Length: 343
Image (tube, helix red, strand yellow):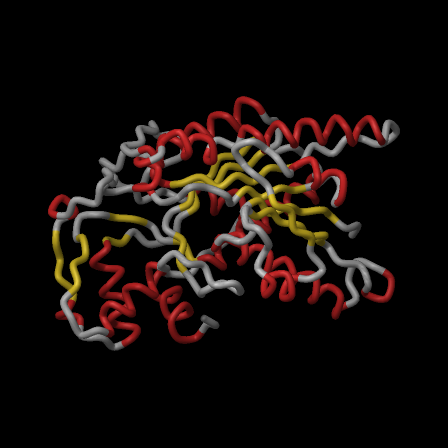
């Protein structure tokens, strides 16, 4: 298999790092097995990622090497052209970058729209495709597959198990900005897969992210032997990060093997609908914490500074039918996160 160029936008974030790590492992596995090239030298992925820091995390660069990193401003698009000039025209771009804290989106709605609607990214991909076709006139132009991460918060949250074709009525600025991003991609780009993800949980990253990881936070809170409030009336379908990465890799491979453009929208949640209380009870069971410390309260009893949809559990039958991927149950994912898997 010829090398395929992959750019992970937002590669220093939680999901981005897990994607890079998984693709690095695939490269190593193929090389050890001697697949895809003479003497096992060929690797399936050439990797690059974007960040918005003065320098990328050295520990990430060391762990994923060989990899190229590019500082990019998603609002202005500054830095994208350097990718084309140095790394080349990508086959696949995975957009993980977002302002994903709902309260931050409420405080700065203009900033949320500027980041969560990938105007500059789509503009760069369109220009890069034209430039590649001009530079290689005797080759069929590669229209980059854009795998764009969205959210379950595009749904209003008034019923269970939303399907992709259900009406989208986001109740907060985060959901509104992500829905606007979906609309922009689908209207302005021809080759895309939009993934509406639920809460992502799993092990810590190579370069630890600063934001709190929900399952680890529950574990630490219950370890303090103090009562902790959890909502009994807010439901989600949390997705284990390694399952989500497998889904993204499956989409990338499907595009490469089928050699056909995609226009795909998928719900990407885990197989279980659970309340915040049930999430805490699962952590308590796995870690043998005192479950009496879990205090069940209504979401309406806490002012979080942002409206949160009560039930945005999702029907994932389309995902299963499209990719034939089975996801692990929530309890097993928690066990892998806290006990059996690396942290």
